[in-house]
Image 1 (tube, rainbow, N blue to C red):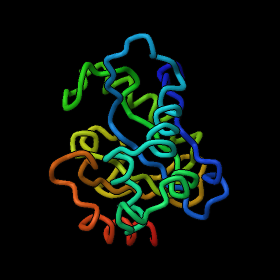
Image 2 (image 1 turned 30 degrees about the vertical axis):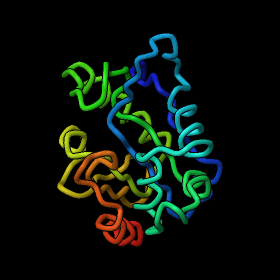
Image 3 (image 1 turned 135 degrees about the vertical axis):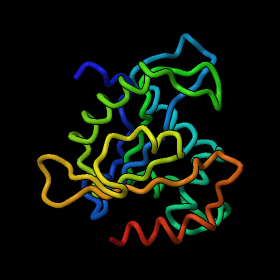
Length: 178
């Protein structure tokens, strides 16, 4: 499919992990228009999950492990997951909604990534994104070419004011046990 532009980040231990967790966020926003390359997502995760700190990536790691920020080993967490953004073009800034065309292109890229990543679990970051995920049923959808079902869970966006890793961690950990 031609709609996938941003290559997903795939941790070095993702394919061998017993739980293949795909973290799906909504979009990139970046004022630097000279840096729009297909490996942008990979470089973003490398920078903010491995080298520097960010509220978003730290909150994701805390939510998945149940460990506080001072204790969580972000590289270990991200080594075992896949991460991508649904929208395949940059937004002009944070908290801006994608256009209908961006949502449509995202659905095509989503299908391609779902087939390639073959996750056992998909964690969707944010209600607005959850409302645009093309799946059947309220909680899960079947992944073509896979035995069983890829489970999906929507949670508040880790950068939102309402997100609490302490609240979401038990829910996510129970989701990952299923």
